[in-house]
Length: 455
Image: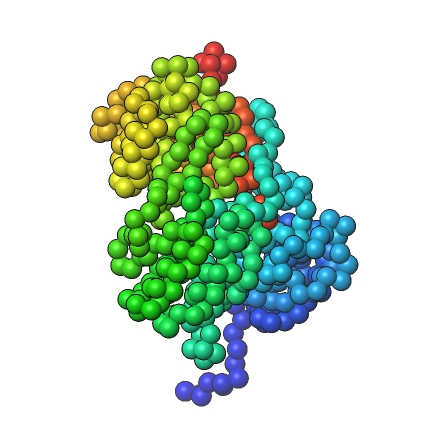
């Protein structure tokens, strides 16, 4: 048998494979439009480029971050011909930090992108548009975030503690000295916190740090090993100096270092105060949260004594205002600790006609005693993966009106299609600008039972 030539090459049936674009390559691009995640889109040699930091109509020089098949991910390194809509990013870390990816775009353009994303997702996944588009709910562009997590890493080679946020599409930490999206009390905490962390004898023990602002300010230090006595004293001194609560978390649940006043937030319109603890879910944007709750109550319009079901109720962010408005509320949540805190919040606010239960909302609800009641109105505020199993059961609950609060337009659209199959109409929808300076889209939609004569 003849020896095979090592030079022989076989081509795949589809023809020659195009060479991959190497990481680090610089390429001049013409940006045509924005993707849903806020990156500019360009097309070169049959490949689609997604360029962080670029705007439509711009000529830019971009550096390749990753490439696969026909997709190239890149970052704008230089703007050759800027869009008239481009603005100087107010934060000095914006070009590297992964926290905010749209500071170079105006507030109006950011809202337009979010509105377009919601509309396109509803059309693509459900073939729907609402009968009425609600005006976007928005608040301050900066100084809005009342909760944030800081990444912490000890760089042994440089003998330096890095404290900040993750870089775009990377695990690298962008060290920060300021963050203009934080509420002012947290901005004021930052210099002292950074100094205290960098003075620790054993910084390697720190995993991450979380900041909270509400009825009080709090700092949670997550540690992976026991803190030396001197380091704990430094952190306590920082907290006392800043009049902030210090919480620690090792292997267990977060715990306050010293007995402290209740940490919580207020919903002024309903004269409510909700207690929460580090680790609990809470909306980070207080002004938009209150506007969101007000809009949900307006759209649901519960009559006094009407039964309302609040699914994924958390601490009672919607349930307690609904109860204050006179509805008979049943709140359901998957985490027992949150259910207990919701009950406590109801008691502390003098609300008796609201009841909370724990249930796995990814499964059928037929065995739950509370699900045997009929609910004229339902409020849903699910996580990113949506509430498909729950919405499949809406008509069996006798629901006439449903407000769906979403942090993912794609799963909202998927669930909307299911609701339409059950005989509901999408009557209103609108954007909630919970995270300015980012492309993250939150939305609210109202579904109403269609009159059988019109189906």
